[in-house]
Amino acid sequence: MTRRTPRRSLGLALALLPLLGLAPARAQEGEVVRSERESFRLTTFATGLERPWGAALLPDGRLLVTERVGRLRLVGRDGAVSAPLRGVPDVEAASQGGLLDVATAPEFDRTREVFLCQAMLVQGGALTRLVRARLSADGTALEAVTPLLDATPAQSSGRQHYGCRIAFGPDGRVFLSTGDRNVDRMRAQRLDDLAGKILRVDREGRPQQDNPFAGQAGARAEVFSYGHRHPQGLAFNPWTGSLWSSEYGPRGGDEINIVRPGANYGWPVVTHGVNYSGTQISDRQSAPGMVDPIHVWTPVVSPSGIAFYNGQAFPGWQRSLFVAALNAPGLVRLTTEGDRVVAEERLLFDRRIRMRDVLVAQDGAVLVLTDEASGRILRLAPP
Image (cartoon, rainbow, N blue to C red; front, side, top):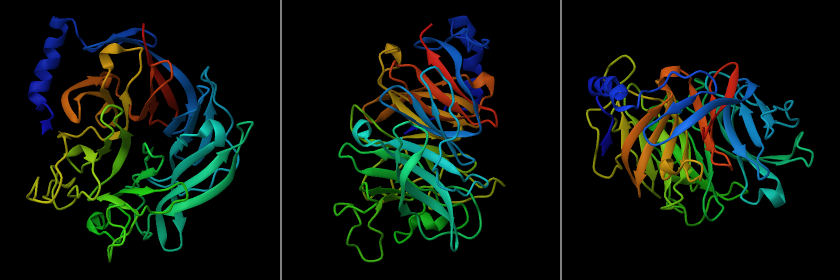
């Protein structure tokens, strides 16, 4: 298992970087930043977004961007931000909830279908909901908005840990992450409960007959894996075909996991973290029948959206996994070999910018959504 460099060792390493010509530059807007493998120019691509949370790249290079407060925007190739799109469903925009992820269907150029994940208030409380819609021909509205799946049961108290990332598998089926909702942690271990899971459904929200728990008494057929705390990143490795997730730990124990069908990832029975008060959650970090993470952060970085880099603009970043980090805030680059993490680099941590999501543009630039009231999209491009 790959572990984070201890704080003291990391501080010494950072102190030595200027001697190696690799100092983490405190560059001004538009200046060139040097990193271990590449130099890049950091610019602000778009502004005027309130708490942007998720983004999806359209075939023509524009972006659909969610704002957690409940708005969906279209961002042009020049960074211009549209007025809020009409037809967006109501959301429960409280605490960590709201309009969260957005993803385009693989055949978007033909169907114009988009999928949204949101916090929703229903009878009995709040829950995570998956929604399908169609982007209008003029790009100003959502049409045919259809709820597909509710991560039941709803929870009356607490508005945290919704999870809510969407990924499409190679076969076109939909994967959705859900959080444990942070009140009854053992929901993540119960197979009749859709909280704390990775779910797999078809485009109508129906569970698949080949899902690992389909037909099992006392289990929901939508469940693909379980024992997750708060997975906010979900992406397929384009070189191995495996599904990777990033997951918040409590105080310590943030994780990168490879999601396998039917696997139990342990929360809260095993964890590398403790309660925020410092008290113990579990005396075990690993257990038989539970899958260990492939990478752990203690202290935490609060990993949110993730994206594999397969662009051509930065050859030195090929086969990297980028992780948007909220606390400590910045952008993490993990070097991968197959389904292993072999190295870690931290970018822009000196700027103290909370980063919520990351994606790779068609020209190979890296785009990062900032978690700010006056939110931005940052662009990392060749100098």
